[in-house]
Every structure is written in structure tokens, then in C-alpha cells.
Length: 77
Image (tube, rainbow, N blue to C red; front, side, top):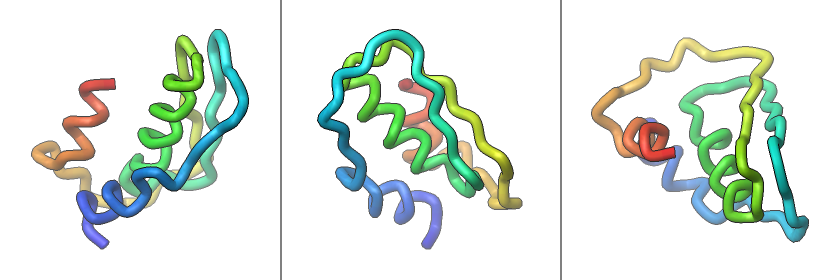
């Protein structure tokens, strides 16, 4: 999948029933496009987190396209 397909494929895949507050540390094993981190950050923010700090243990050598929809979502927060 390319970057945009990957970001669209995970929309709605993550949810929480918990109410979050304050800062949340979000951990991921490997970042490819950042889609998982972005989508999970949105879910946590909607659930009340005031700040989400993302930490990943590794990163693939995926070429990040600055014109993509995912890049626009990252800039929007």
C-alpha cells in the first residue's frame, strides 16, 4: 500500500472507551508512514488527552511524501 492508501485503511480501526486527561505517552514498535500514530493520537485527543507524545522503537526507510494527505494531517494535529 502507498502512504495515502495506508492512512485511509486504518481510519476507524482504533477506539477507546476510557476517558483520558493530561499527557499520554503513545508507544509504537516501528513507524512506517506514521499513520497509526496519527490515528491513535486523534482517538486519544477526542477522548480528552491534552497532549500525546509518540515514541517509536524503530523506523522503516519509507519515503515520506510531503504532498500526501497524511502529511497534511500531521501538520493539522
